[in-house]
Length: 459
Image (cartoon, rainbow, N blue to C red):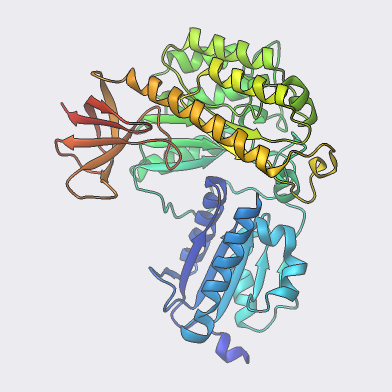
């Protein structure tokens, strides 16, 4: 194809962002840079001159989805107006050289640390000056408040990425390979971006990273000191002072580094939601050790006990891996007991699968798929009952709900979330009486309880 055919006349772009909210933030920064360069976002790929897929490769299903999405969109190079198909993110970071050979449809691969270079790379492509297809290095970059960002989430909420990369090195996880070592943003940078987001109408800030509990350890003054975590405390206390923000939600705070000063701040705050995503992955000490987790079953339960004493009514979310190599029936029973004792409001259960490049692949005593499937079903049923019982406690109460708009299945109902429900992953509050617009925070009396959702009326 000659260079004239590569010229972007309309500068229109279609973007597909796959995987986690952290990947979505990267996509939004890319879109911000592209918009500053004069690109407009196309609603569909039909007429877009540039198509970018920001991919995920965390687990096998995510890899399959990434490949299928890219191949589906590749058809627009023949049937549409696409002049450049770009694959970015974790899949490109991990497999760019193999994919160059296997997916000739893709014009460019951009790794997880180069996404901010999207505009100069597209310009070089236009001018026929790209000397290679893959732009993948060891990830060292993280955006700041000075980078443009197009918030594609609903106008009332945003994800705020506080750090990138991870130093934890769990044996099942490929993230440190894909995202690099921990790189924290400064408190000043995060507060400034929070203020910028609030100025656009954002009311809910969701704080994300690979590991919230390690935030700041790479910065001067970061890390735990005398049983306290001063930088995390400073970040949260300053974010809750940002005018216009009503909810600040914390994700991925590992139990081993959760300190009481942070718990006390959450307890006294009117803006930090009484919600915590605290990944535990397992309860059996032997499995936790093989996972390279720096925690024991006793410590996990102690942290949960302290949290509930200090913050009555706190909503806890966690994630569990079932079927990890070497997980015996005794280990699984310990996991079941742990889940029943902890009584998490929200629980994500993942079936273990070998992930090439991780230490867990080399572990012996693999658990058969049939056993993994059976244990998954047992956990699922136990958690469903727990979630329903905990939801019953809302019956008859009046709670604040952030309205998201019309119900996804009918315009006759509204839907929203209370402070104990995170976007995309938790249940909803279905509103069957009363009117409000998206972004409103209203008082709702809960009149009915479903397995994961609540039903109520505006009062």
